[in-house]
Image (cartoon, rainbow over all chains, first blue to last red; front, side):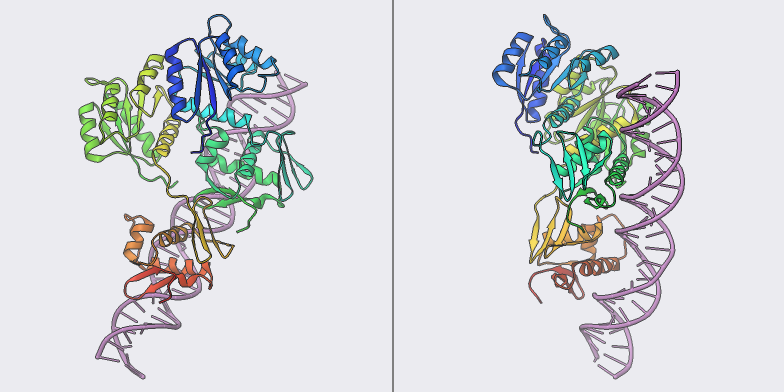
Length: 232
Length: 232
DNA sequence: GATGTTTGTTACAGCTATGTGACAAGAAGG
DNA sequence: CCTTCTTGTCACATAGCTGTAACAAACATC
């Protein structure tokens, strides 16, 4: 596994929870910082510039929600991905949480697998590859900055999932991926979706790319799919 | 789907639950064993060496949690993946459950889809992938990562069986193998196929490799075939 | 060279993996 | 509330792979 040692700041008042999360993340190859309140958390953020923040909803003093809002308002910390931890899966929380600018939220209790999966997904979204660098392959251009795809100058109209799928393929060319791997990488690992769903999205993507470019996405029979300029 | 018939041991005191899970898993292509208590479970583990264990949290006698801990302490069963089933999603349970070394846990009630998905995820993680290094012989390259074969730069188009056959040969060069041995190694031992089928696939592989490389696969009359750079 | 045995080659029927269109449920946005 | 877009799933169509048989060619033995 190529897990770059990303740093994650865990903010929770219960040390037992912090510990549990830290252990899970460290097993997955992340480096962890801990804070029990917003003051410490803020100091830690300024000081160590973590790659992302895990923030408990309920905190003594300033609530996690309020803290998240504040971080998203500050230019210095605006870009920092935040995952909110909520105690119960109440709809209100969800709405407010996303409103506050958090990138994702997880309902306690959660499994370490789920945590790591969503954390990966958020980190991936936050750092596509080069931050604003367009990728071009044989007249097919994917521009993350504009969130737009063009095939031989013509705009390609695709949904979010197809976009992420194409982005993954263009940043991972030449190699074959199984449906399961694609579900992990593009959908985010913690979703339970039929494998054949991948086929459908591949189909939609190919169709959108048109006959001039659809051959870039190749079927590897019995295995999965591959993005490649080399024709077989 | 080519689900390799993995064996799953289901440990739960309620036979109705066991049954339900077994049905779900068997529909997904898994083979199931059942046990209603830890004693039976342990016997079954020693006896049948299942690929993974689904363990109920609450069990009469030894609790599932305690049992999981014991299994993770024993070298013999240490590597066996365990998924804990918990009746209620209480935080305490989760913390303890993960402490016990379980690889994941699922909170009842759960959907069969979720069960199968998480089971797959755990099994995938437990099964390390094979070698991912490209092999090259006289301009013939087999790249497992890309799942692709090239002969003098040109992509070679072959089916899954020919691919596996070539992979076997390139990792076992210079030695002659009988048709039976090849069936065991490439087809997978427990299939009944005519020996002459090997000949047909050899033929297909040679044809796909083209005249420049087909001589690498040599016929050993009265014995079988051999992959060798030395001309006989 | 005749004969029996082993291997090469081809065609084909059945099957499995993948392609494809349609649909219902949900999310987004008026 | 309605409209529009997206998404996951299904059912069916299709294409490609697989195993087998049948025959041809090569080889061995005498």
